[in-house]
Amino acid sequence: MDNRDKLLLAASRIYAEVGFRGATTRRIADEAGVNEVTLFRLFGSKAQLIAEAISCQDPMGTVSLPEHPVDPLRELAAWCDGHTVVLREMRAMIRKTMADLEEHPEMAPHLCNGQTPHFNELVCYSTRVVAQFSTAGGGDVVTACSMLFSAIFADAMSRDVVPTIYPQPEHEASTRYVRVFLRALGVPESNDLVARAPVSHVTDSEAA
Image (cartoon, rainbow, N blue to C red):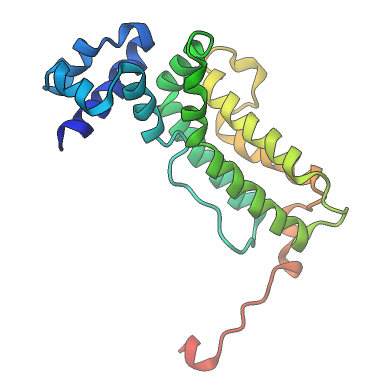
């Protein structure tokens, strides 16, 4: 690991623990095992270092949706579960960033960088689901995706603070969110989709 990576790792760890003010350049440099001169040579300022440390993190992990929907309820629930796990693992950093936004609004785009591609993926997948399965015109896909995305983010960030406002039991939350989401898009329950799922045309030689 080179000095740049060491500093980014140290900055993300310390920032998640103590926030912007507590994450001094000296503390970060000591944690990384380099001197402050190197820190400023590589990043220019503490703000730039922390901004890059936040941008390097993917707060929703690498869970992805299939290109061709088959069982939207199951596929979306698994996607939500996977992202919720990663969001909870990064909860300290995300909370610190949100708390610091009043004083450091320039940090907001860096936090969003990791989440925007996942939201776009959800919109694309949901658009395909509507085209394939919806029985009621599809509804407002982007707004529905915003609501689902917000639900899993809020659940990951706040269930430990106000557990009574979230679906119980916890392990069923993603499925419940997705059921409401699909209902808003006019998509029937998974069991009703079997007859409408695309047929995979496999030749005899491919099957062999």
